[in-house]
Image 1 (cartoon, helix red, strand yellow):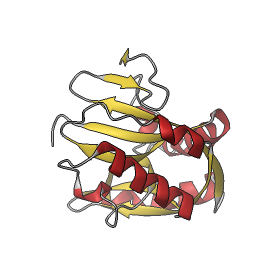
Image 2 (image 1 turned 180 degrees about the horizontal axis):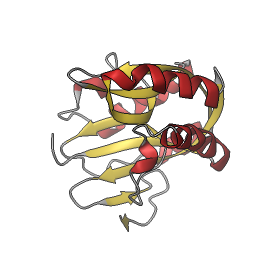
Image 3 (image 1 turned 45 degrees about the vertical axis):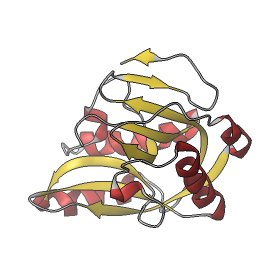
Image 4 (image 1 turned 180 degrees about the vertical axis):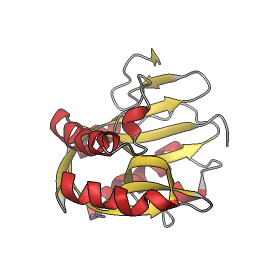
Length: 180
């Protein structure tokens, strides 16, 4: 999928700052990091749904499920080839899995990315992309020193990212679109 729409959980300021400290620690160690992506839309998040197109589902019912207390756990490594993605795992809770399933139900049928479908989803917060294989050990050490083994965070909203129009909106409160 090249042009996609995604629905993502976003965090309160304190939670976002905690993740950004880990991003910054990777940069300080001269490693790949999400901190190097300086686009206006780049912020820590948990991707809930990705598909090539998404109508305008009414997600206002999700407001009652937020804020959502979550725990970020141990780092995960995804990918194949010569580089990997490093992410923080999100400890699954009944509330998180229920919210994820509800998002998909409200969005209706679609051509979802397999890794975001209920039953195939691994909740995570990306810390770095394109990490060379020979840098994984160093990155793991940096993250072990920079962060806590578990990190309590608060998800406070859902945002919609449309890569084709480069816009971000809040589909729960029906917030105004911003171009990034």
